[in-house]
Image 1: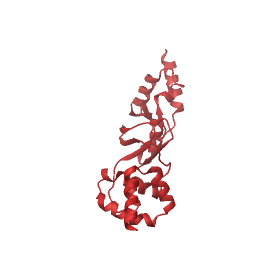
Image 2: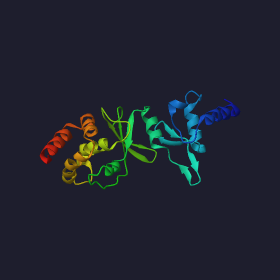
Image 3: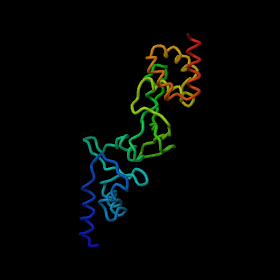
Image 4: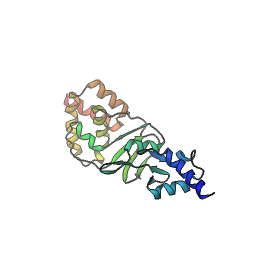
Length: 199
């Protein structure tokens, strides 16, 4: 292929890139006749950043420099799916059970991938779950905190002690629904027992 044809083919790929978007290698097959060579050239030119195997980011600039990819956009491209819930365990601190730890990690509940994955310079904890909401609520966080309290840097006994009294302050219907939908067996049994004992 002549140099001119090569550069115009590369320019054609460059034209479809949108700043802030995350691309899989497969996304560019439709516009590239030599996708691996074009990806390599675009990374070298700074038009793309390689985040992981087969995953690339078209950088978005601000007055402060290059912005990182949006977490939801990154996870959506990685999973090739919209069906996930993304949050930091620091969100548990909003529930009122006395938790105070801050966590520098992001949990992704989904139906496809399980394990720790580094995407760009971010670490994600992917967990396959049969059920999860698509938005965070106080009731979901309350139940999920109790499901996971043993793996958190918190005093589990103190969290459970507060949970029994907090249970009465929250909307009982919403909380009961969240407990049935998202609580593991141990959480359901223990919380029901604690509430009976406190009654």
